[in-house]
Image 1: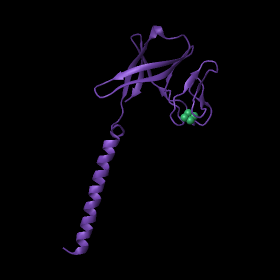
Image 2: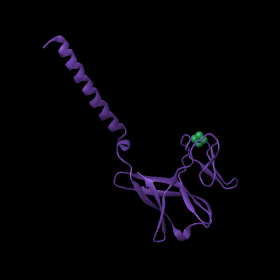
Image 3: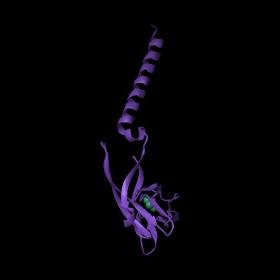
Image 4: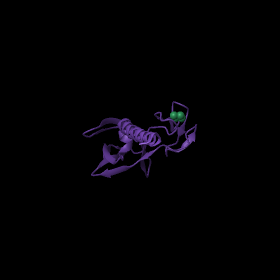
Length: 147
Ligand code: FES
C-alpha cells in the first residue's frame, strides 16, 4: 500500500472514530434532549376547591419510574375562563411572582412584566408566559406537563 493511500485511510478511520465518540458523549450528556418528551397530566386540585376568580400559585408532584419532581404553575381564573401558566419567565428563565396589588406577574431578574393573560406588558421578554394545558375530569383538575 502506498504511503498516500495509507494516510488517507488513517484519516478517514480517525474521523469516523471521532464522530462516533462525539455522538456517544452527546447522548450521554443530553439524554433527555434525544428522547421525545410526552405530555402527562398531573392532578392539580379538586374542582370544588377552585377559587371563583383570581390567580393562585399551585404546586404539583409528578412521579414515575425514572423521575420524581415537585413543580409549580399559576392558575388564572376569571368569570368565564381558567388558564394555567408556567412560572418560568420567557426572557432568561427566572421564576415570576404574582403581585396581587398590581395584578401582574413580575420577574425579579430584569423587571419583565406579564398581565393575567400571560402577555408581556413591560421589560425584556419577547414572548408571553407559556400556557399549559388543563383538563377537568370527574371533578378534578389536571395540568398537562411535558416530560
Ligand atoms: S429573566 Fe425575566 S426579565 Fe429577564
